[in-house]
Image 1 (cartoon, rainbow, N blue to C red):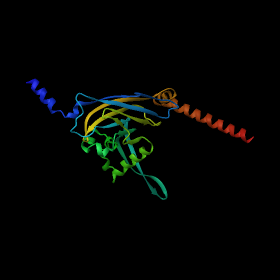
Image 2 (image 1 turned 180 degrees about the horizontal axis):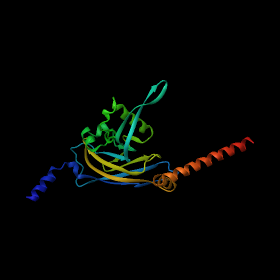
Image 3 (image 1 turned 90 degrees about the vertical axis):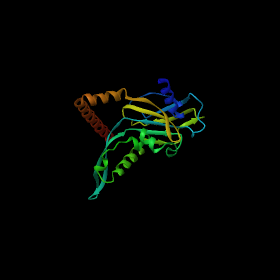
Image 4 (image 1 turned 30 degrees about the vertical axis):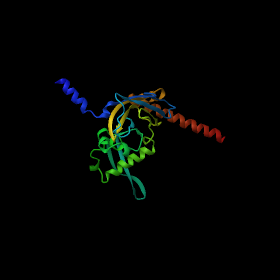
Length: 253
């Protein structure tokens, strides 16, 4: 009975279930130092098969996403009041990743179905959680578009369609550039195999991003001893101001 049930489960699996991901990364840790100006991560892998690739299904596609830590975000809309631009209306987005990149072998709308996009949360719009935002302001969608526009211009949200190289439906690779303004924390890397717009296999990895050296010392000081950090900042500002004033007097004389 158990053997028969096991056979039925195997037969019920789609052919794509026999394709699995074996992936790696050029580095799984990024250190933020005083001179950090970004980092490039190579994500590569191969498709492991127990049987030959199916001939009766569509071509293999690959999607790679890199997602930074998520936090609530307040989005404000400015309005002109008495000739002055001021913050008029604001809404709070429950959760938005500090960084998000999605790289693919082809156009997203050609290789990914809406159903699987909703299920796995692959595109940037599906990753951002904005429950109840429509109750805070009229035309709430404009605030989400504004958030996407700002972070895209800052290089924090990226859509890299066609940037995953796939060779003979077996080997794949892509490069994802992490910007200099990274948020410390764990960056989730997800890899998806697709056929006929459906996800047939996935894998998840993690990149650790951490401040090091002087950056770590300053961050810990600000978090653990804010009063001392404030006093040191005031002293440094005073010394810098005095030094600039003295240099200016020397130049004048």
